[in-house]
Image 1 (cartoon, rainbow, N blue to C red):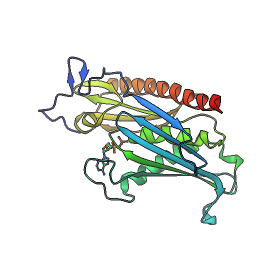
Image 2: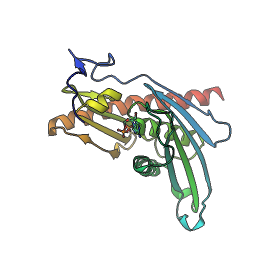
Image 3: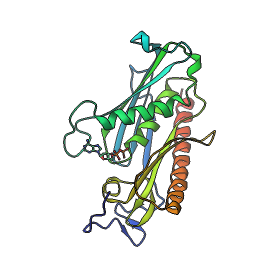
Image 4: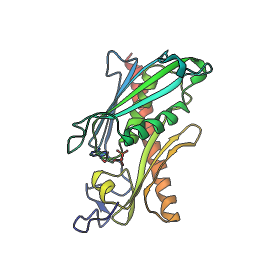
Length: 239
Ligand code: ADP
C-alpha cells in the first residue's frame, strides 16, 4: 500500500467517495434468492455484489474427508472473470484459496457442526462485482445463506474492515483507499459471544492507530449485524 501523490484520499475530513471517516458504504441484503440452493443470499455493499449459495448438510464426497464427529464446512470463494476492471483469469488462485480457507474457519466456528457427523456443508461465495472488502461481504452473504438454509448456528459471522487512508483511520475502505491507502484491517466477529473469528492486516499502523481501527471495525460489524438480523426477521414475517 503506497500513497499516490496525485490522488487525495482525504480532504478536510471527507473521503474520496464523499463518506465521513466512520461511515459504511450503503449495504443491501436479500435472502432466498436461488431456487436450487438449500440457502442463499445476495449482498450489495457499496459497489461489491456478492452471491452465496449453501448446499447441505449432505453426504461428504470424497468419503475419506468426512469427520465421524461433525460436519465439515467447506467454503469456495470465487471471483467471476468480469468482477474486476481487468478480466480476472477464471479459476482458483492463491488469494481465493486463502480467503476460502479463512472463511471456512470463521463459519465453522458458529455452525453446530456436531449435529451432522460425516456430512459436508458446502458454501459457495461468488464475487460478481468487486470493489474492496469482498472477504467481509462474502462472509455476510455466506452467514445469511447458512441461516436461510436453516442450518443451526450459535451466532452469525459478521465482518467489516477498517484501516488508514489519507492519514486518517477510516471504516470500510473503498477500492482507491484499499489500493492507495496505508493499511487495511478486515475483522470478523461473533457478536453474541464477543469473539474475534478473523483478524488480518495489510500495511502499517502504530499501536494506537491499530486500536482505533479495531474499534471502528468492531462498530461497523455491529451495524452490519443489525441489518443481517433485520433481513432474516423480515423474511420470516413474510412467510
Ligand atoms: P478484499 O476484496 O477482501 O478487500 P483484497 O484486499 O485482496 O481483498 O482485494 C482488494 C480488492 O482488489 C478486491 O476487492 C478487488 O476489487 C481487487 N482485486 C483483488 N484481486 C484482484 C484480481 N485478481 N484482479 C483485479 N482486481 C483484484
